[in-house]
Structures are given as C-alpha cells and as structure tokens.
Image (cartoon, rainbow, N blue to C red):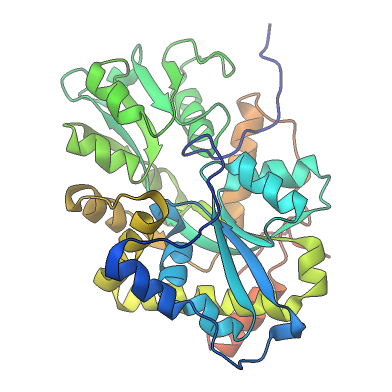
Length: 367
C-alpha cells in the first residue's frame, strides 16, 4: 500500500519557537550591534510605520539576516521605522507567526514556504527574494561508508520528515533505484529523522551512520570525524539551489510596499557587504549567533560551514519548483499550484536602482 500523502513539513533545525530578541548582554559585540541597530533620533518613518517585525533562524543559512541585523544594515535603510527581530528554530513556528501577524517579513527555507503557501491556498505569503544557496551535505562515518553505494543498508539522519533535506535525500535514494517508504523511513536505506541539535550526539553514539544535513550541522559532524561523501550542490545545475528565501505577508506588502522595499534594499546591500568583506561578515554572523543562542561556533565548524554557503539575491525559483516535484514523487505532497508564490517586482526595482540584473520567477510569479 502506498504511503499516505501528507503536507510537506517545514524546514526544521530545532523544534521550538525561540523567544523574540530582547536585551542581549553578550559583551562588546552585542553592545556594538545594539548601537548600530538603534533608530536614529528624528529619522523619518517610512509610510508612517513605527516598526517592521522581521523573523529568521539563528542558522548560517540565514546569513543575510544574521549579518544585516548585527551590522544595522536593515535599520539604516528603514530610517525611523524600527526593525524588530524575532528568531525561530523551526519553519512551522515562523509560518504560524507570519499567519498571526506576529512577524511581517521572514527568512525561511523552501519547504515551509511551499507548505505555508499551499495551506493558505495562496492567500497569505509571497516569496519576495532569495537569500542563500548551498550549505547541505551528506556526511558519513568513513569506517562504515566508503562510497555512495555503501549508503545502502545504512542509517542516515535527516532533520525532519518532509523537510527540505529529507526530501532531497529521498529523491537521491529514488534516483539510485533504491526503495524507501517515505513516511516510515524504512527500506533499502533507514532514514532516521533526527533534530539537528542532537544529530552530532547520535553520530558519536553510533545511532546513525551519517546524515544529510545543512550547515553548520554538517561541519559539526566533520569535526567529530565524519567525512563529506556528497555535497548537494553537485546535484544541481550550476551547483546552485535555494536553501533560504525571504517571505512577506501579502497584506503587509500591499499596505507597506515602501517598507518592504527598504528591507529588500537592506538585504541586497548586506549581500554585497558579505561578498566584499567575507571575514568581517563571518565574524558578524557568529556574533549574532552568540547573541541569539548564547554560544558562538568554534572556528573548526564556522570556517568550512561558511565557505559552503553562498548568499544570493536570486530566489532560484526553478529549483524551488523542482524541490516541490521531488516531494510529490516521494509521496509527501499533493501536486501544488505554486503560481503566484513569487512577487519579485519590489526586489527587481531595488536591483535596477542598484545597477544589477533582474531575477526571474520561473513562471511562478503574480500575474
């Protein structure tokens, strides 16, 4: 009997909604960030709006949000409208917050964006920009797995049933001709859904033989003696695939388009700053991680993880459509109608003003 079809689960690094950022007292780095993020006294509010609520994950694949908030680059574009940040550890929590109006704009992975769009029948969110590509690897125990063929019969962790990496791994398994029941994870490969937070411990204990995971979890496994057997980027055209998007509430976009444009300008300028100042950007991202989670990443994890993630303004829309198809083939998603999920008009306006080329919605944009 085929596995029952369920809605695509959201990208999940950890399972719980994190508290909104408050006064973080993590030494001079946090103080510097607080100073940079202050609203300039007397600055004009955009559209008369007091604040815009922005959500993201304390994760390196959300580097644009980490660096932009840490360096005050969003606030600089927003003038007298205050950027208020909340961080989340799971896609469903962020989508719930967006639906409830607790956040207006968010950084999020492709699977929860697809899920949120289809669940609301296309009425609540839009993807308005890209943010990151890459940063996902298959890391294995080199004593047990020496080649791709050796993955058969082994226990491999993914973050969550139906999440972005889970779907990618199930699709890779199917393309090799192996059989796995998507719901249970049982078959020619045992797919073990494991929270990224505990995957390194599961690897150390031998509970899993490897994992298909995003950064920095992949580099944490390598630090524990694991070996990168496959970089997911190698499976995609031009080695590019979407790992993080920028989304917005449709109502907020309609009511405050200038504020949305300001945040997008901040994102574009942040990405340019990251490209020009990679070491400073890496340090800024780690400082933000420390402020958000209380713990910075060690260099042995941070350095390789940072190198494998590429920030981008392009949402790489064709790859999101392909990821949705992979979920359908795995039996985890009914064929979704994604037409209208993108509104790249505001981003392309910002890019044009910056003298950059426009980005494409792969035919999935608003009419």
